[in-house]
Image (cartoon, rainbow, N blue to C red; front, side):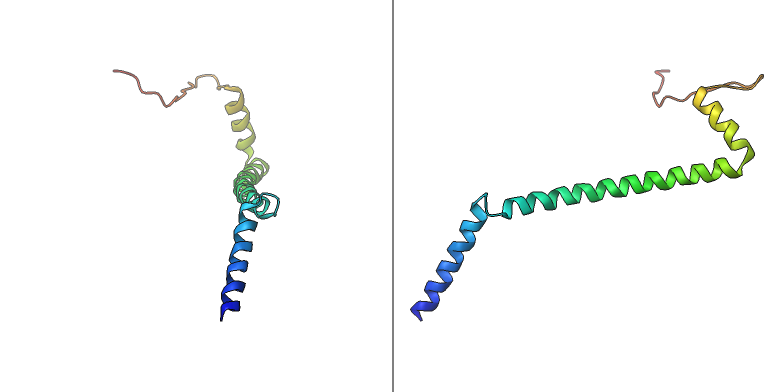
Length: 94
């Protein structure tokens, strides 16, 4: 019976030492898990952005007015007789 307690104590001590020891690989494993989570979030963001760009490309290829609208929005141009209104998100104090 005493041998079982000794084996359990040695095993528990070994686990504690592995968790404390920075060179054991556990700390590196935790760092890599954290880095993986950040990378997965970045992949999701880039995938969503990529899908948005694909839809813009499809729109530019299929809609005749889309190219003109994109150019006008990018350069801030208007046709004669039109007015350009820009919203900044700031509210006036009136």
